[in-house]
Image (tube, rainbow, N blue to C red; front, side, top):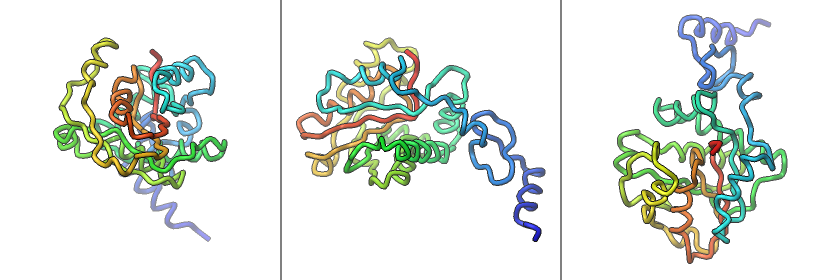
Length: 232
């Protein structure tokens, strides 16, 4: 029996080509957002690698942080940079949701999902969220939640001050720029709970560090997860 829907998809792709957000090659058949080849070959962060150890060491000063994990390795002009650019600046929220789902599924397959009560995303300032139209970390949190079954919220934390981009700043300048930026909106939602705190990309860790500081004194157990980690 002829699969007319498949032929229709192929016809539409000829007229209006859909491209992979990672490599920009044409998607075919039932491929969505990221092509099959890129899904397989995206540079996963290997356990106990130099970058993985760097991720974990960034938060050692916080006893409440029980683990820090990143899914992919960020390199300039690489596929992960293309995906993050699409997520943050091209309106492609589905990229974040898909990566969250992929990461969650892979963690489940390896029995590595932390035991947690809630996933919370790092918030944008309302002004920046209005400019962008969405928070990219919410998309990642939503996908991770779908894969793991852990509830998520984008409203537990609030960003109180509009900050300039961290790009080009030194490590100390980044930490100074983020000091006191966040506050807790819903203390009862996380007090005494096990939390997964998520963001898009980890560089120095200043933003996530400021989030952890805001949760001090609430007896939280915190796990940190990001889409990617930069090689710093």
